[in-house]
Length: 329
Image (cartoon, rainbow, N blue to C red; front, side, top):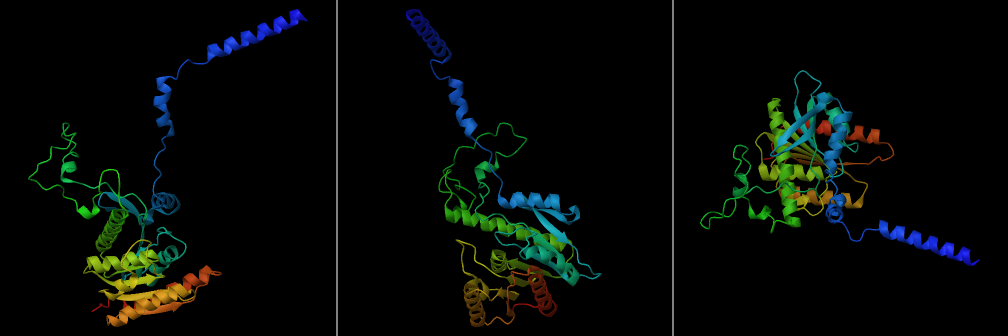
């Protein structure tokens, strides 16, 4: 018994010594240095970018147009009119939860409008909570030249020179933070730039008339664009189930009162909140004495989306036949 106990004790001591020998005495510097890198993850693209990539793989390449808006390129979907003499082009702006081929309204409309004699150009809009592009200052503008290998640092500040060429409203308070207001301003500029690019493309196609059609929050951006930019070659606006994007202003009824274009406001009357918002827009148009603002109430048919899409298309086509190219003055 004593010999057995001694043998067992010796085996335990031997096992412990091996375990102690295998355990490092201190943490290796390389492990601690690699730990942050291992936790880093690549930044995910915006939802709109991911959905645009899916559309690129799913849709006919002949429908796809990569347009340029400032430093960004984005996907637009183009279908020419199915007539010999097109009426013009309809530029479709989807809502925040839609893409350029959204099933709620944008996709069916972009495919049906060519049968009514209109080119359709459907846009991909940036995410409202996406990161704005880095602000471009006078100092950083000199760093981007590929021919100057020594331009790796910004030149020293000149007290007599202007601090920056960027609007202070869109410039972050410091390099590490972007305020909600600055983010909203940056998002609005991205949207406006994409509409600019779409109108330029429609002009290249020699469209006789250009109509902006917005669905959901896309209607807000279409109305805001027309109020702020007032392009000479866009005389018509179509709003479908218009919504105010979260955090943005002014409200839609204020935008409607300032619209310089003929406007068709199509809304679904089933929800009390939608009816109330539509009534405010109608009252604002009456106060502003808009001669070419027309509101159309429709019934939602969630159980039969095909019939709902056909109803919307027929109403829009009727409006275009009667009012397209009418001025808002």
